[in-house]
Amino acid sequence: MSSMSTTTLRHVTGVARGAAVLIVCAAVLLPVYWMIATAIQRPATTLLYPPPLLPIEFVPDGFINIFRDLPLLSWLRNSAVLAGIATVITTVLSVFGAYTLSALDWPGKALFGALLLLTQMMPEAIIVVPAFQLYNDLGLLQSLAALSLLHAAFVLPIGIWILRSAFDAVPREVADAARIDGCGHLGVLARVILPLAAPAIAAVAIVAFFASWGEYLFATTMISQTEKYPASVGLATLISQLDTPVSELLAGGLVYALPPVVLYMIIQRFMIAGLTAGAVKG
Amino acid sequence: MTAEAVPVVGTSRRGGTRRVPPSRRRHGVRLAFALALPILAYEAVFVLYPLVRGGMMSLESTRLGSRTSEFVGLDNYRRLLRDDAFWGSLTTTVTYAALVVALAVGFGLCTALLVNRKFRGRTVARSVLTLPWAFPEIATVLIFIWMMNPSFGLVKLLTSWIPWLDRDIGWFTSSPFALISIVMISVWKNFPFYSIVLLAALQTVPAELHEAAKVEGANAVQRFRYVTLPALRPVLLLLSMLAFVFAFRQFTLIWLTTGGGPGRDTETLVISIYNRAFKFFEYGYAAAIGVAGLLVTLTVAIAFLVVNRRLERKAAR
Image (cartoon, rainbow over all chains, first blue to last red; front, side, top):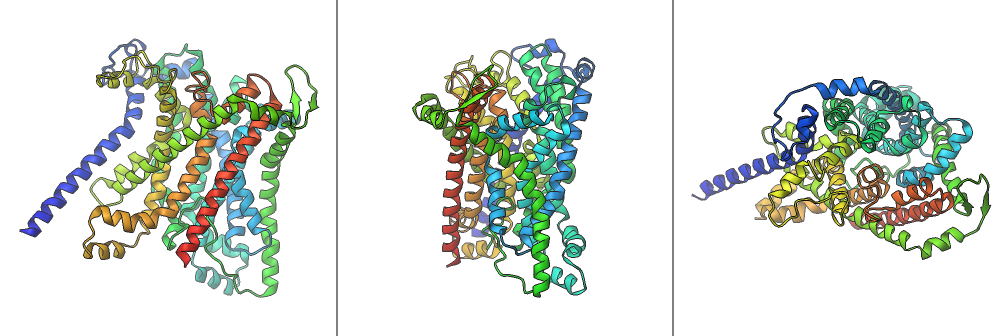
């Protein structure tokens, strides 16, 4: 009898949990659903109130028109250049930094770590004016490559910290064995640690890509020529202009959100494994 | 235990020095400098130098139109201390940050607990719950501006089903809804990150502890209170600090929705720096606000580090 009621209780908890998961997922997905549902309507339909909760039309006009009316394609290309450079720089320098913090003993290590932490805390807005003046002096305004350097500088600390815990999780015996076999520091790094920390490296690359692809403050400050806009700045200017139909605007937003979302879906498993790397060892 | 299981910030878990021959160690030191130097140089150019330049700017008075600036000493800071707008935006920043920390980390914890146990469709649920993290901020802004549109928005329809609520709320233009709106948007965008990290931390809570507590007759709430929560405490503390720093740094989600308004209702320090610099061209004063903001962030961070160290020591004992 008592075992029976325990089973029932477990069943009830299971159903309650399932319901909770469904409700929370629906709440989180609602904005994304509404974005898609609006993007596939005709402009006139989007101005109905109350809005139809299910899309009543499936028109691709928004997606076609935004590419026709605006240089969205080159904005996306600019974003790709920007995020690509920032990702490469961040990933390479994160490997260096994490290795010095994880595997090497040297005076100044603690200071180095503290300095990185300080950078991590810094609101971008504090340095946006001096950075603007610096770029202005050096003639680097309007340069996507120069802007990406600034992006990388702000993700680098977090990249180093993610990789450092992953490097820490590589068993010491494995690294020592390789060393006895005649590997130098860099040999151990390249042949032992990097392959084992691959998911974490992927995680760092993704974090850097997301950060640069989405960054707005520095981008809008440094880039003022329409054809040089990254997609974040280009789309943001449309918000205040109010002359783009909402279905077009949201279609543009969806296209812009697609690369990171798809990328995330593909390597999500790695991502969680990579961020967990340090935790497994305990 | 896994006190610093979280990747983002952490103190070294490997205390001891590796036993290596002196020559190799010297080589290690050289290598460390060789690897760290490019990073230091890089951060020095792109973060430290602008920061120092900003600090110097805060001692100057720069006016619109004139290319010269004069040294005014601590005048900008004196003005800051007497400026109600500054104290107002400091309060706004702290309020906004505290709300986002509590809600985003709290919701992150709830969702992590929800999908921690195995069930059918768990992988899908995890992907869905972490999706907003991959969603860029500008896309987030676009969709929420549309959803919260006072004439045609979905939120207007949803709130019209709540009888005691006014139908025509300007979600970004009326007090206190503007603040509530930016908090909600920030939570939606940011909770997944905390959820992922907490999910990772939950994997490290030993199952035997739960079993033992179950044998002792502890119910689910007690097991959470006495087993899960103590194990998560260091991670939760760390994430709260991180969430505070992120909230403090937040610009895009606020600037493009409320722009700091209505009035100065949602003008956080970061927004007021931007306004001072690019609307009123008071570069010196903007820089002074920036320095003050950095001091606030640092104070909070140091407080966190002290508490964290104390907890670690207690755990080690």
